[in-house]
Each structure stands twice: as C-alpha cells, then as structure tokens.
Length: 593
Image 1 (cartoon, rainbow, N blue to C red):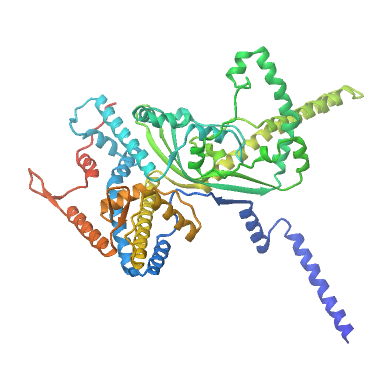
Image 2: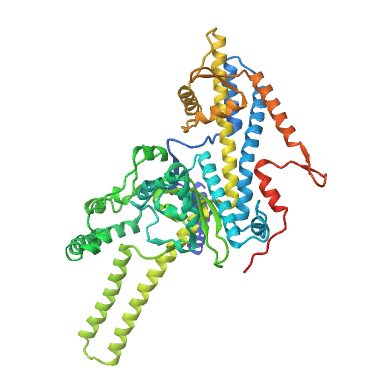
C-alpha cells in the first residue's frame, strides 16, 4: 500500500515538474519576483557608498540630538525636557530670522538675474537710485553689472557660511590624474559661458582667484563633505581595454614620445611629451579639508599595475573605490542666443560625485573622442576586414566581377562595423552622463539657494544647541560636586563637542566653534571673562533673554511708517529687501534696440 501511494505520488509529481519546465522555457529572459529582488540587491551592493571620516555639517536629526542632550543633562540633575524644547524653539526662531534677513535679497536677485522673472530685469534696470528713465544704455549696463557683482559676492559668502569650498587647482589636477567610471575624453561648451562676471570677482578678491582652479574663470564649482564610492565586479570590458593598452598602446607611446622629442622638440614641449610632467598631489591641508587623509584610491591603475598582475587577476572580482564629493554646487553665467541680452545665471547642485568624474557636472558636456583601447579595437577590426578581402582577391582562382564585388562588400561591411562601434560607444557614454546627472542631481536654480539656506539654518541651530547644552551640563556637574565654576576655552569646547558626536552617534564633524560662540554671545547665552574662556548662562535666564529678544524682533517687524507725501501707512520693508521693493514699484523701461 505504501508502495502504491509512493508510485501514485511520483506519477502526480512528474506532470507538475514537466509543466514547470515548460513555463521556465516560455519565460526565458524574464525575471521572477524573487530573481528581481535578488537583482536589485546585487545592484545596490555593486555600487555602495561609505561616508568619510569627517563631515562638514551636523546631519543628525534635531529631535534625536535634543533627546540625547536632554538625557545627558538629566544625568547631572539639571532642567526638565520642556525647558530645553522651549530653548531650542526660540534659538531656531532667532537664527532663522537673521539668516533670512541676510539671504532674501540674494534669492530675489537671482530670480531677476537668471531670467526667470519675466520683465523684472528691465524694471530693476529702469529704476536704479540716482538714475532717470532717460538714462543711456551704458548706465543701464553698468547698473546690471553692479547687481551681478553684488550677487556673486553674496553668493560666495553664503557658500562659505555653508561650509562649501571652491574647487582649487590642486584638487582639479588630482581629479584629472586618474579615471574612475568616466573614461572617454569629453568637451565642455565653454564658448556658451560668460567669463566677465567671474573674472571681475577674482579682480576684486585676488586671493580667491589664486586658489581657484583654472576652469573657474567660467565655472565656479563648490563642494562640501567627502565620501568613498566602492564598486565590486568582474569588469571584463575594462580588463580587456587595459590588456590592449598594455600590449599595444603603451609600447607605441614609449616609441612615439622619444621620437617626437628627438625630431620635433617644440611639438613635444607643447603637447606635454617632454617627460617633465609629474603626477599632481594634494598637500596636507587640502587633503584634510576634503576628508581624504585616510582615503586611498583603488582603481584599475593601482590594482592592475603590470601585465603579469592583469593576467593573474583577469578572472578575479575586483573592488575599486574613489573619493567623492558629498555635495557639489555649480555656478556659471550662460550667454543666450541673442547677443544683446544679458548673460543668465545658472545654479545646479549634485550629490555623491566621484572626484575623478567631477567633469560630469559641467554644462554642455559632450563626448569628443574615443579611448585608446577603442581605437585599437576599431583599427584591428578594419585591418582584419581588409586582410580577408585582399587574401580572397589574391588567391582567388578567377578574378571575375564576383570576386571584386565580394571584396568591396567585405570592406563596406567592415567600415560600417567600425563606424557603428564608434557611434555606439559615444551613445553609451552619453547615456552614462544622462543617467549620472539624473540620479545624482539634487536641485537647480532658486531651489539650490533655498536648500543651502535651509542647511545652514539646520547646522547652525544644531551646533549652537549642542555647544550651549554641553556647557550647561558641565556647569551643572560642577555645581552638583560643589566644585568651582568651570570656564572652557575655545579649543576645549571644540574637543568636547566633537567627542560627544563621535561617542553618541559615531560621526566626526568639523565644527566652527568660534563662529558658534560669536552667535551665542550676540544672543547673550554665553559670557566671556578677561581671557579666552567662557561659560553658559543658566537655562531659565537664557530662555527669558531669548523671549525678550524675539519679542523685540517682532515689535520691529510690526513698526509702520507714514509716507511723507501721501500720508498712507505702509509696512516697513526689511533692510535687505528695501532696494528691490522700491525698484519693483517703478514702471518698467523699454530697452532701446
């Protein structure tokens, strides 16, 4: 009986397994949900990113930071959590008001200078103070130049406040010295970018121009934070390209460069073939500022330095890594099609851009050539077709029209294959550029300014709250132990805040304690003695002081002034918006053609 049951069950399983195999054959090339989840998991693991040892902003959520600080303060028997929440709220209101007062003009001016506000530019130009509507075009252009200069100065100050750094020449050379995933030579549409605005900036601030990269004459690249991008895979195509370079391209260059230096010395010196160029390196200060002190590049040049190493690891998985910029902001002035129009400002932001592939964020990027390995492949493909055709033509038994036609067809097919491979490779790199920009773009135009202002507000609020609460904890702990009042120096405060963030959250942040102390001193939350040490005001007094200061700020915002001629009551505009509000009230000027 058991044998029968076993046989019947086997007969019932056999058709099911057959149907399952038929379904698998019909679904060839498709993925099941389980396979799709595995593919997604592998794709995520293929390119994963690790944060570097240091950050430029405190990215910990404010609520989590506040809860942790309250727990630390409660351990010393200090104030309740409700008082800390009130302090945090008032501190944020004050910092937000001050930041918006200093940045609203910048946001409104960008809307006008970028051409996104319609006729506002002509309206502003027509109503500059001290200028009549019958003014000349030279005065109009001078007024527009003054506004642009003021905007770019304020923009650089805002980016510096947000802990952004301008890309330096050493960093640019460091980026160009190696390749990561962006390997084809590209060209930037420099002719469509205006250089006068940034050149005037470097004339006004020569120390900035001395540090900036050479490309900064037309494009300003700001970056903040650093990370490491790692990719693991077989990289068979890259290994084949590397093998062709080792076997063909490098021997050719070793013979070509000495010949050029011997026969054409001037041509060799102009094109960098004199052998005097060295690999660019970053100094200690730049490496520390980028967070690259303990970051090592691992690309195909370092992992496969020789032909022997390449052959040994040809069928071995590799793990490559490249330092990245956490955030990149690109600023440039685009020349419109009409020559009489003013250049229009452009702002774009990106995230997680590999240092070696930083040129992917440049405007108007297009592929201009091929890699040396691709050139070798195409030449070999073309020569093989020519060799086959000549062989058939020479050793053919009869030299009729059929042999000639077949030879011509072989050559035409080889030429078409060569052309299609070039076009396909360029299309693949264009798709790579588009996909990179799509997945790594953050924002553009006014959204970039709003994002930077918001990130500054969050960071300064968290940094100020962190410093004040830790100072308050130290004072409470010393009071509980009947010790003398502890006064802390700037260096001690920086170490104290950095250690707290590293111990509690496992992050290392480069803090600007001196700037934070200046803000807290303006708000009256810390007091200095004769030396460099300082201490925190008690929590109750700090809340009362912030409440009075915020009430005074609201009272100033509600002050009304009467116009001298009409007697109408109007709200007093903020100082930063006074100029724009008066300009927008005037009738627009029609530009002369």
